[in-house]
Length: 287
Ligand SMILES: [Cu+2]
Picture: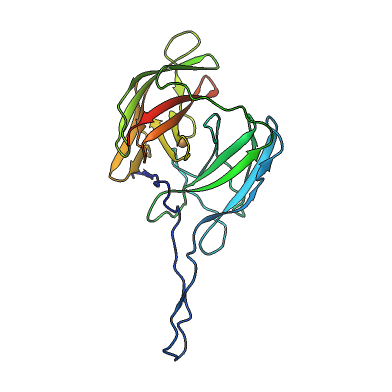
């Protein structure tokens, strides 16, 4: 079975609308039916909206309210990366990213401790994969969290180059000329502290998670690099799709398929030698 990830273009309401038509009873022919508000999926009981301090664990909790008002209790399961709930926090200047998968309680409540690295305003992306997805495999809901304190602004580096994280070096070896809504690839080589190609271990169902946010609007796109033979690694946007792969050990072909031009930041996440590493790059995309 092919499991595909359809990422919703930003600005589109990430929900299935159920129109309720009321007021149709009776014999009067003079009144028009009243159309109720569209019922959608939404985040319920989100807490906290304000985090007291950076560097200390804070429990973030919420539920996914369904159109019928009940909390969603069943999420998609399986071996690939496109399952359950991805909970992602990105600071509004694209300086920091957190990516976790909160466990689902029997009552549908989700809670997970999160340690924010620095003060500032964070966009919260809840990427939901319902168990009974019919029309689309996933959708996203959004919130904002503010971590108290003065935020030192992040200056995004120039595109390309290298990033060293905990002694591991990520080098952009080739960047395609990227255009909005067209699949393109970035070749990123990873070496260990010894300078040799790194051995990347699958983490959360993928060899690497490529999480993209657009500067300013904080539009979101998320794709994966999978081990050979793994399924559920293709991302679709409009009529285009992209599947990342590891060409040679330690070299990742990361697929990019973003909905709009502008400056994007790629947060490439993978596990090497027991460490989960996040390597950020600046990615220009023409409209
Ligand atoms: Cu992922």
